[in-house]
Image (cartoon, rainbow, N blue to C red; front, side, top):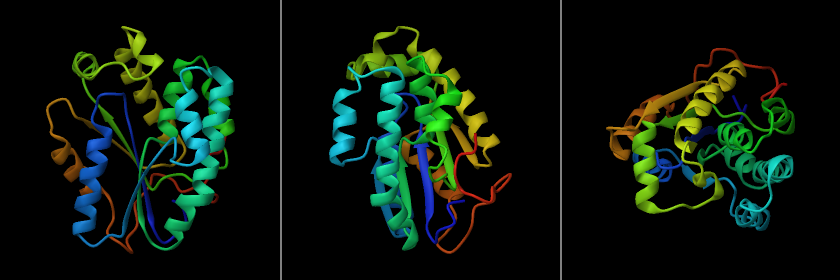
Length: 218
C-alpha cells in the first residue's frame, strides 16, 4: 500500500501483549527467509521521539496527539520512506492504531487523530495483538507501571475494546489487518503467524481496497 519496493508492517496492541518481543522474533524470521529487515518503533529514536516518550506522562490530550503525529511525520521522512524505497521490510513497534487508542484514552476524538495523520504512510499489513484483559492486567502488575495509562484499573479492558475499534477503522482505510490473540501463544508462535502473512520480497499484500493515495483519508 505504500507504493514503495519494500513492505511496511506495523504491530500494535495493549501494553502487556508482547509486542516488542514478537517484533524482534518476527524480524529474525523474515531475515532468515531473505528479507532485508529493519526494526523500528514509535515514538522513534530521534531527538523529537525521545522528547515525546519522556513527556508523554505530562503532556496530554490534543497537545500530545499533535506531538506524536509530528514525530510520526519525521519518522516517515527520515527513516521509513527511505528504507521502503530501497526494498527493506520495515517492522514498526506501534503506529497509527496506537494513536487511535491511546489518544482516545486521553480524551481526543478519533476524527481529530485521523485528521492529524491524514498524510502518513499506511502500512501494507497492520497487526494488532490482543489478549484477555485479566492476562494483560497480570502481566502489567508483574512488570510494573510504565506510564500514566496504567493507573486506571479498567485500562486493560478499555484498551482491548478500543483496539478492536481501531482494527475496524484501519480496515475502512483499506489496510489489511491481522488481529491475533496472544493469550495462550508464545511470541515465537505469534511471529510465525505474522510472517506467513507478510509477502516475500518482491511480492504484494492483498488489501480489501487500495486508495490511489497511500495516506489516511478523513
